[in-house]
Length: 286
Image (cartoon, rainbow, N blue to C red; front, side, top):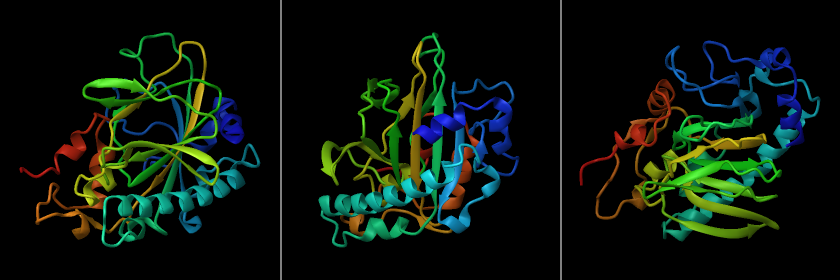
């Protein structure tokens, strides 16, 4: 996280060298901005496509700190290996006939990374948020939080918000809209403690027919201390028709309709972050 801190510690003009352009979500700036009078989240953000390497747009990659690019490259490669292994274990855990079915959807496809800087703010969480409530529109998210003891991530369950502690050397693994499972466990892989909390990503919720459930989450800000994090997102191929995989459908009972992934993402980014509304529209009546 030293390189993340180094980037955000630069003057604004230096960071704006990586600014988003009108036709791209990549770069330094805010996403989910749909109107000029919208209240923005209390955060600085930089979003990059990090894998595969040939998909990178170097216009948006910081040149300072000089080690930023190498650090992101190494981290994204190692994190993706871990993510593929987790996907296999998850499929195996719910009894899928083909444990590699989830991994194949994401292996070798696009990965994005968003690094976040949350400045301190003394206003209450009901007035200022670092990141608005949402679920992730990916398949799997690995979140690394800076080890400065500042808590900011919260998850929603039964209408209440619960804080997730920032554990030094830990990754938070999120289920997104295309997976979905109600699970909470903690385990060790390669001597690293991972918290596997309720949410891989929106994509996994759909693929697993609701066996994996994406969790609504948000980021709050500390009144006097800054916070930083880095989120790695795994996406399926852009032209994929996303719907429940056959091995996760029991008795032909599909809980979600199918959609083109590209169209799903266009809808996701064209609206302000607002809980689970973008996912609820795909649910089928039971």
